[in-house]
Length: 430
Image (cartoon, rainbow, N blue to C red; front, side):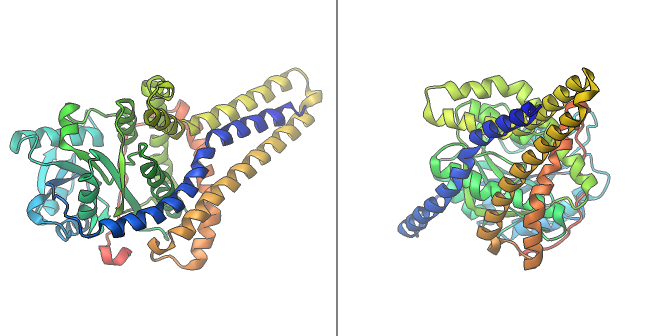
């Protein structure tokens, strides 16, 4: 009756091999940053063309926090005449629009209860910008969430990377409330790891990075080529990333551009948000899976690896879920043929489960610990003892994805706004 344990061992081994390249990324980052440090010194002081940007912010009942974001945009070390803040007050029932206007933003108010979601709001803004200013007035748009705060050099750094020819790029996602509890810390560590050891490594290798919800730039010519923003799945950011890679274009990364994002602090909020993410990933696999994975077999080396990397990014929850469901199905079928084997089946199931959890926990603990150590200077308002504790709870937070991934397979999921309440200035979070 040990075949269940052997089967799960085989599954874990295969998955570990498939994701081993992400461990290699860590070494690439350490080596690559030494090279980057030398290059920065070599090219310091070289003139950089300054581009015209629009900070595009979709906001739904965000009057508590949007003022602080706009303050950080107004305080950028970048020419104010080349930077506009544009807020889409999307189905708001509060005074978000007025607060945004009071802080100097251009505001478009949108009321549409049928087409709900950030993707529709962005497309609405692009249409109005084209009508009011022309679709080439801005060189690029930077998509930012209403609860974010921007480092004062954010746009200067984004402009520097944009000037090197990247039409689409993402930035470093830090946290406003890392130390609130184990849930906010779990999110924060994941996004910091994504910036430091995924997108950073991808940029160094010349392959494609991935857009993650907020803090990403899109050149206006990309919007023109694609006829607006036509991404409306539950995870429109990953949908945009997948479509970009399928088209053969790389997404860049700007490590010097940092934003601070508010993370959920209750499990109810976290469940709702991650349920949408999990369902959105399934939608993406259904709509783009064959074309994305097909890119793995192209002759173009960079696109081949980018397709593989992104396939691994959108597939993990589904792979783990299917593996667990298959094991459970086998157990139930064998139990149906005779209760004599039940004790042995239960023992095999328990051994298999413990083996899987131990392996998963260890790998996630390693990722969390490396991120916590290397990025400790970027973590504020969180004492040392909490950082140590949250390194151990990080794998537990990630393990809670398992029931969410299972539930998302069967439940209907709709986009729901997450209420943001961390109304702090930039000085208070760093």
